[in-house]
Length: 189
Image (cartoon, rainbow, N blue to C red; front, side, top):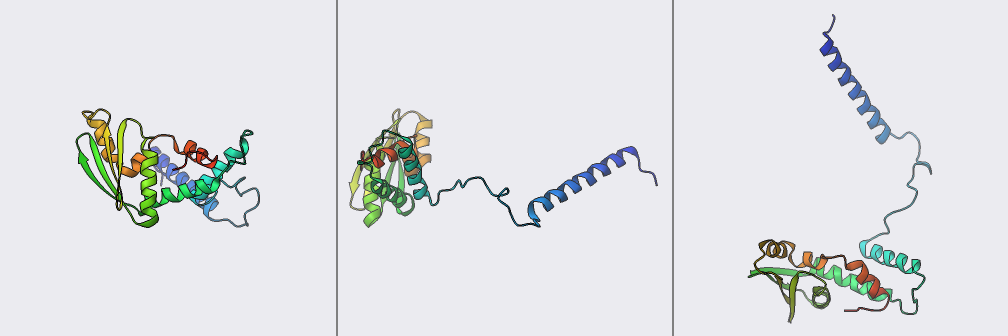
């Protein structure tokens, strides 16, 4: 039986695609030899858990800077700050209410979490640009009022409400600089 030219072309494409897929599957999933040094990554890229990785990043920066004053370096202060970040991020409770021009965030927790909330709200609030940030301590944490600089800017107001408390804490490229300053012995909460 002789196939028409179009059918022959389609059949050829299907067979070629199938063979390529089988070769790819066999090549990536079916190893017959143990991995060798040439198949392993050249260097490790993950330095560990996120707080450990953040500290490792700062250590690399400190070691690369010949002006580092090692007598002032305080990585324990940075570790404590990273613990605060984790407490606020993972263990606090946030209730958000809209207000004209922004939102109020009631951020609460107990013990170490409550104390971390207070430090983070006080320290990081002034780093968020384009908003007014007012933090008042409560028995359980803080009450933070955030308003857009221009309260009539609907996009800015929606951004505040959309980011919420934790999103606003992340705004800006200040964290690495802040962590480096803490590690160098300055800018503590």
